[in-house]
Each structure stands twice: as structure tokens, then as C-alpha cells.
Image (cartoon, rainbow over the protein chains, first blue to last red):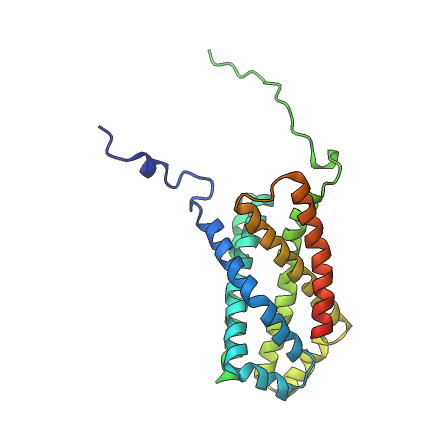
Length: 123
Length: 127
């Protein structure tokens, strides 16, 4: 008698090792970004090119600050998975590992920088 | 016993053999624009950090962000954002199992390319 179900034995056998989590995350973040990005482009585009005081006033308001934070975090999470997908298509072995780790690290670094800047401006 | 016999396997045609197809081009453009956007994001985050650090440093970074170089980066990023946006919506549509016949797929490819240019121009006018 086999105690493991067919499903249990198939789990983790795919190429990714994570099932469809990656694909599903990309779909969810794509929908989220699709809703947020047009408004964000408008706010950022208006702020870019204005003086320091106008920029500070823009991102000190709750809506622009929260939206920019969300676009940065979700956008960079979306980027890091997309970039990882590209690296996995073109690089192998240790090069692949080093590049994937670098992309993940750099994405979180940018998120932290952006959120720090927003917090400092808004608070 | 188990001899290793070289098997004549058919090789798949190399990418260069194919006539360029819109579906393939629009697919690789999605990857190029998505990954290329990191340049615009880096400049934007640097600019935000500068705004948070003070007047003097902001003036320095703002001068770069609004120079011809900054304009070039942000204009190309805008085009990339809109292309990636439309191509992403197309991807979601494809994922739902729709629009996969060749005429529709090619039409949607042209919509992504033309639409991204139109949306970029509209954004520049509005902003």
C-alpha cells in the first residue's frame, strides 16, 4: 500500500521547485501595478522638474506617499521575479546563482532607499 | 551490452533561420522593456533620496534628472512602461486562453507597439 498520494509525490518535481507560485505572483502584481501606475506616472511626472519645496510638499501628502511606496515595493518585487526569469533563461551554474542573488539584493536595496526617502519626506 | 550509439537527432532551427515574426518580437520587447525599466527606477529613487536629504544635494541630483540625460532616461522609461503595461495586459488576456489565434495575436502586437507610442505622447502632454 502506498501511503503517499499522487499529488504528494508530484509536488516539487517541476523545474521551478515552487509550482505556479511565481506565475501567480506575476499575475497578481501585474493587475495591482496596472491599477496604480497611471496615477503614479501623473504624480511623479508633475513633481519632476519642480522645485525642492514643491517636491517635498507633493510626497508629504498621504496619497502620493502611499501610492509611491506601493508602486516601488510591488514594482520591484515584480521586477526581481522578471529579471530572475531572464537570468534563468540565459545563464547557468554559479553565474546564474550570483546574478539571481545580486538582482534580489539590489531590488531590496532600492526598496529600502525609496521607502526611507518617502518616510523622511512624509514624517 | 549497453553501447553508446550516437543518435541522429533532428536539430531545431536556430533563431536566425526564422523570418522575424511580430509575436516573437513583441514578446522579447516585453522582456527588454521590463528589465530596462530598472534604469529609470534607479534614477527616480536617487532623486527621491536627494529630495529627502536636503536642498543642496537635491539641486545636484535634480540637475542630472532634468538634464538631457535625465530627459532621455525618463522618456525612454515612459515608453517602456506603457509598452510593458499593454503587453502585460495582453499576457493576462492570453493567460485566460483568449486571443491566441494568429490574426488576433498579431493585431494585439501592433496594438502594444502603437498604443505605447500614443500613450507616451499623451502622458508627456498631460504631465
